[in-house]
Structure formats: structure tokens, C-alpha cells
Image 1 (cartoon, rainbow, N blue to C red):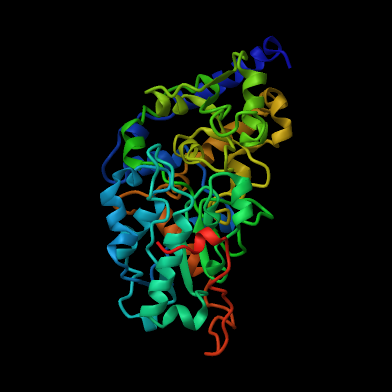
Image 2 (image 1 turned 90 degrees about the vertical axis):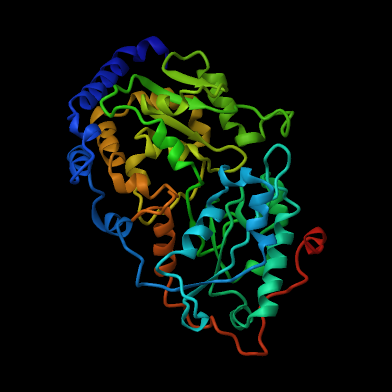
Length: 430
């Protein structure tokens, strides 16, 4: 569709969205006491209907007990001391989940009364100079931590880890590689076959997503986003917004492999389209710009997920999800089909037609749902923790998996795990 042909309907759409923002009472932005702000926001948001809304607002306290293994510092805290960059990158959920659980009401110091056992190992905190997790180190760290707890405590050995969970926020979860081809070749670490994985990676029918995993949002710094909030009555004058890579010439010099070509298609089709504010530049006003946009593109990169999804929801920008077969965070609680727009990778060239054809009523409803405070809270790992945040959604997911099914506890002579399975490099000591 030519850009001139869509200018009039888009102009009307932006005017309608802007009018909706302007009509929001100033109290929604200014009230800070006696619940006035929450009341004002609720007037201009929409509660999630049905069981999803109930699940999102669940309180997990009293529904499960978690025992935290006391590991040597080299598996967690020492890594952060060595490289504090781990506290701010998109994999940091593993660090903050550990800190949250240490003071959580679900923690128990009595392992015999625990429903779940948590191994606080930071597999993404051994970084390259560029800030990327070392893929050959992660599986060795994980194996070493499992060997340690299985030698010191009896609880792993009685179930082969079936009542244990790990946070593995790597690009492709417990496959521990940022490139899909190599992640598939490695596969999930065999020792984790019976454990529950809490991970950012989610894609249907993929070897790096095991059944029963809990999909979580990547870490995005809550305090930093809070500092960039703009008045809620600011008009949304940008139609489509995206900042990021379109090509990764360093790792994909021939092109077409990175993002399965979807980002390259975005650039080639819409780089000159005035409706699309897309660029590789990352301006200081990035967060403010998202709050001025109607649609925020969330295409896959090397993996299907990215922090843009979190940022879009928090800033009320309708996420346009371009990642075939993606499994999204807390899908039993967040109605992604109602708040987002899903575009197949092959349909990227038609993206302008898809978005300009959406009825204004549908767009405004998505925005009202996105304005629900519970929706935003579920995507964040705030410090300190707050009710209904991502920490509590993880606990809700673990609680809903209880009671453990029959067969969790193994006879003393029965073992399901092969401690020597996996690539030779992963078997090296750490």
C-alpha cells in the first residue's frame, strides 16, 4: 500500500488516540496519596476478564514452600562482584530472583517441608568483553552446581531433580547458546531433563523448550523506566516505532540468518515509509518515544524474545510481535492475543496494510487493557518486590504445578539421568 493512500485514515486514527489521551484526567498522573492514582488509572483501563485476570492477581504466599540451597559464592555472588554488568543486562532475572527468594515469605529453612528446591546458580554472569554470556562456560557452571548439591544433600538424588527449579534466562534457555543452530545442536543440558526450567526462551515445538517450563519476561530495569515516564495525557503521535539492528554483519555476514530475515525485511520495505519511525539509532529519548507511539515492533533477533516486549507493555505501546511460534511470558495470565498484534514473519512486507486496517475501536481497547496496572507489574522485577510482579507470577506458576505427580520420588536403585551425556566440552570441570 502506498504511503499517501493511508495518510488520511492514519491521521484520523492518531487524532482519535490523542483525544483519548487528552481526555484522561490530570489526577491519573498527579494523584499520589490515598489510592487516588490507582483509582484514576482504573477509570481509564480495562480489567482482564475471566480466569486470566484472576490468575494475574493470585497471591502465591501460603501455596508453596521453597528451600534455597546455600551454594559457594563462586556460583553466584562472586560472579556479580567480578562483573557488575550482570545486574543490568537482560539476563539479570536469575540474580534478582535469588535475592527475592532469600527474603520471601515462601522460603523455608526446613528442606523436609519444601515443595520446591531452588539452586541459585548464575549461568549468564560470566561475560565476554562485549557483555555476552560465554556459551561454553554456562553448562559447566550448571553441571558443577548440580554435582555439588547432589553430593552434599540427599534431595536431588531422590527425584533426579524433578522437584527442583532453575532460572535459565539465556537466549535459548538451557541449550546455552545465542545462535539457534548451535543451541539446537547442543540441546538442553541432559542433567536438567526432570527439573523445571524458568526461562525467557519460548518457542513451540523447539528442542530448547521442555514441557512444563515457565516462560518469564526478560529483565528490564524498572527504576530506569520509571525515571523516563512522561505525562499520561501526552498524545501518541508516532504510528510505528522501532530501534535496533536490522542486520548483524558480525555474526551473519551473508545476511538472511539473523532474525530469519524478518528484520532485514522491515528495513527494506519501510525505511522510507513516513508512518514507520525505525532506525538503528538508540536515542536518549528511547523510552519517551515508546510512550508517544501507537505500535512498537517486537521482532525476533537471534532468539524470539527481547526486552522490547516488556518496554512496550510498561509504556502502553501496542506490541507488534513478529516471531513465529513464540511462547510468551505468563501466557496463562496475560491475554497476549487481546493486547498485542501478531504478524507472521512472511507477512512483514504487508505490515503497513495490517496496521492501518485495524479498527480504531480495537486499538483503543488494546490500550485500555495495557493501562491495567497489574499487566505492567507482571512484566517487571522491581526491587524491592511488589505484589503481582514477575517474581510472584513465577511463584504462581510453580504453585500451579503442585502437587507433584506420582513418580517424582524414585526407588533408591532407579536413576533416570546420565551424568556423562552431552557434548564433550560441556563435561569439562569448572
